[in-house]
Image (cartoon, rainbow, N blue to C red; front, side, top):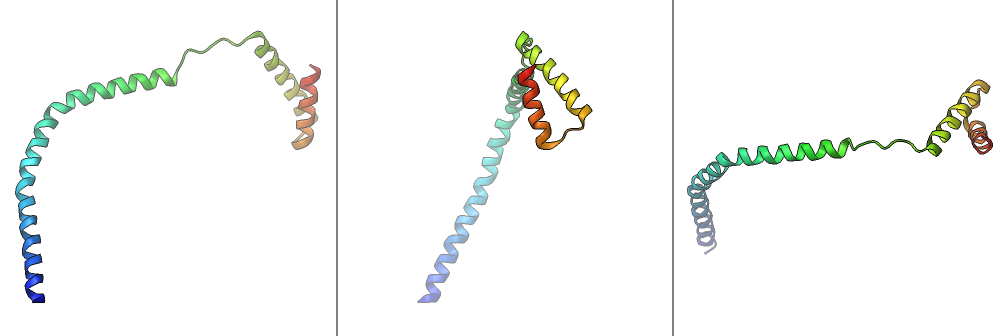
Length: 103
């Protein structure tokens, strides 16, 4: 009885495997046909993606406000002073904080 069940299961699995192999060439042919027209469409989509990415990567730069320019000048001066004094770590941090408040 056990052998009969095993034989039936094996025969069923083999028939389904062969049926899938017969269906595979038809599916591959259909996919190849649709892929023949796909390169033109995908190339256009890829071009649009590249254009969007370059637009997002390089937005128009705004000019710095006068307050930003003044802050940059303060930073440059304070950095120069901290470097000439040889400050590092917490001492540099404290110096920069005080220097930026004063300037």
